[in-house]
Image (cartoon, chains in turn yellow, purple):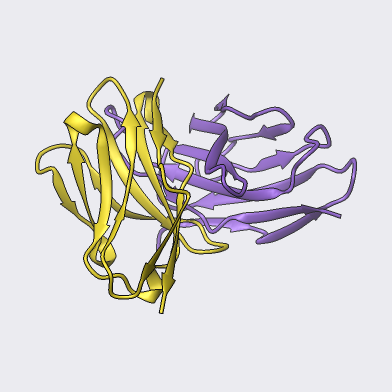
Length: 112
Length: 115
């Protein structure tokens, strides 16, 4: 069955440090992968998406993600975290019939 | 600006009462979705609709009902049969795609609590 796993429930990083959020997927066909961000009490905002082609994709707010088929991973990265990046991050895979499966989310805390 | 509007932002339900959450989109999207979000559980799909007058159950449809009479509207009713309705509810829409490669667009959510 299609699924998305985000191994880290909560991550804390210092402001200015680099960030990597992990995402692993299970899907038999070509995956369409997405990262979303959610601020408290808000909806989800799309950060970036991968369909095909270049395995390193750039998104908004300085985020990027790398698709690695051999590892079934789509990790999100940012070179230098800002306090405003504190939020919950969701990885998702688009599956057949226009459905989408979400990971459980990773909550990011940014220390001053 | 195109987007998805959910209302109200906060809603309170009494025991035995049905309540309806509104979701309206002006993105001209065919597909619409309702998710329930509980702490630490991510998003769980309640119902979805890919065309007017048609909808399908998601993973946790029991105690919920929907209608899709207009393309832009997809209201969710939380019935008295839903024994644990306290949660954050998110509505989303998506342009149809033959390859399921379109992102979903989300509203700002409705927080439902029990009085």
